[in-house]
Image 1 (cartoon, rainbow, N blue to C red):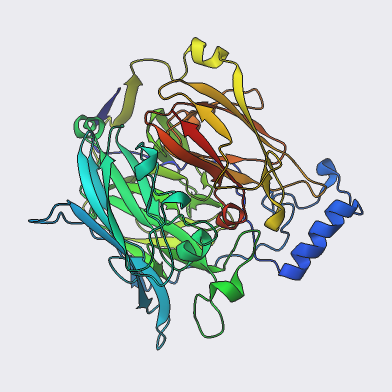
Image 2: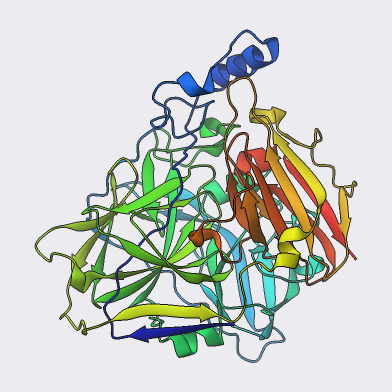
Length: 507
């Protein structure tokens, strides 16, 4: 349990960061030719002498990353509604995957997918320890699943590819939020259809509210000073449609159009001096490095699975697909005459802010908290590696430990409640390899080390996804609190669909 103390209301925001890495859209012919050259051994590249490494965003297979078009700030940011409880039903909530249309561009209706609406989905809020029943219904014209990403629930309720729901069918799942307060999310997970369904709009936020934030006095007025931000990039065809079959890239579909909460050219009117933002990278493949346009710093307070061991101050935050972070910004500390926006690493404006509040900053304001125990105990650090995972490849040649996903094969077994050390190795190829965001279902793990070095302060918190660089070895402390069969996979969605996924059975 972390005890948090906020004195006053004046806080600096910092987005904690690593390197930005963004896969970009490449033609299939170029990718195939590239892959062939790797296997033929006809192309060699010296890592230390590669030019423009930073501009390539560390993706050796993609050298023309499309820049995101800056937001014009013409549309007030759309906020996902809170999902309301059902009355007089044998279930508490209902979530429906459905088709719809969304007007991104004047005069055009773009075909989209959404939960309980045309695009994205409502925010589901659960209290720590609460058990609810959710009716999930598929009104698409293809199979789907409902995966509760980051929620520690039995494998039977997790919504992996083994839990397909056919068109027109429904089922009731039981969700118990038996974990600390955290910002999670939900999305589809049908094998070979996940990337398409997320690209067309399926995804939503899932909050676990707990006692930590109750006595921490953190901003928690949803839609006022506690704002979800779902960042996604998209590419549209000449008819301004999300034509996935035409536009997709098997190495990760990347677009030049930036959407925040599904809003094109968004802006946010800030009405409170201190704001809490819950950021999700909901893209298929693009990794984001977020900054403030004026170079100001921020405070990161949480990662995927909840509060960090201590607040982290920095001036940028990198998130790979599926990663989340919670941050605080004190706008009263910023120059009110200078435009302020969240930008990407290249300085492209993603979300401009309009400031409309009376300053309520207090003197001697601080942010502090203390954990009752160290993030990693000596016993945890000294545990031997029990599971080794090798990530390798690109396009449809991706593998884990040399194999592609087989729904009839169990790759690992692990006992419920027993902590083990997983070592994940991102094996480079002849072109240097590419970043793989690695996700495990059904658990919130701890990062023990990266290439033998302890986790950075912004990674000393519970995680379910981790960015792994080419050639990097990352050790994770993994504990499953429930039984069942769970997926582990690369969260570049096209890689996942191409078989970069395995199964662990928890008994």
